[in-house]
Image 1: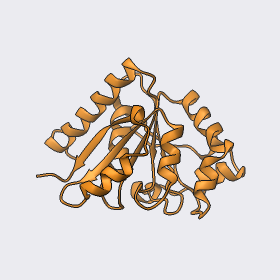
Image 2: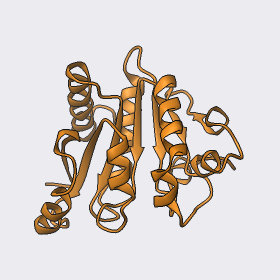
Image 3: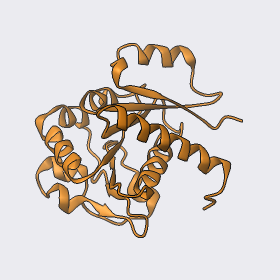
Length: 199
């Protein structure tokens, strides 16, 4: 709502960082994760995707992979009865589930119906096939992941993707917890940390 704000400039800086890294290394699919809920992960993923979609010649997709509590469609006011869980279940194709946001040019794969067996679904070959299809259709695929501190899903997603960004909230995310969660993650895939809501 305020494209000239300092807040928006920070997101543009994040986009520039991602674009520069993608020129130096194969970087097409990026997981955006957090330690806990309500740390700004989904908003960061959405704004990064949105700005990538504004870049000349770039097609961007955001995937809501938090299938226990899919929220991006509601956040954006999109009404759809199809999403990632439906593609995983084989009841629709990837192309049928993707929604294009006008006039931004951003594409979204909503979560679809909430499911409990998320870790099993995204660990299997079907999710790899979906991600491979998304990479063929889009220049950048941003994956909004569940919180690292609660579920193993984000760890599985990071192993599937080319890179990962971790969102932490100032005065809320505990450093000791962050350090513990970062330890088993593949260091070569970690692109950096976004410090959210800092003064």
